[in-house]
Structure formats: C-alpha cells, structure tokens
Image (cartoon, rainbow, N blue to C red; front, side):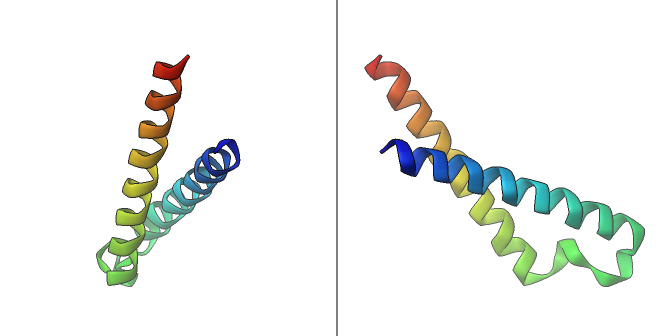
Length: 65
C-alpha cells in the first residue's frame, strides 16, 4: 500500500508540474489553445482523480494511526 501511495503522490507532482508548464505556454501563445483542447481536459480530470485518491489515502492512514 505504501508503494501505491508514493507512486500516486509522485505522479500527481509530475502532472501538476506539467500543468504549470501548459499554463505558462498558453499564456505566451493563446492561439495554440492548450487549455481548451480535449487532451488538456482529460489531463485535468486525471490530476483531480489523483489528488482525491492521494487525499483519501492520507486521511485513511491518519485515522489508522
């Protein structure tokens, strides 16, 4: 379980850093429409799922201890 939790946390960090890059690129060149594409919407949904999963795992662990 610990390995899964660490993997989700690392994946969430990597994806959030990717989102920062996409946001910056969209600010420099809004005509590329990074934040309106279907791929970006899927990316944001996956980040939300990872965040909720990490939070649930943290809460469950803190309640056990």
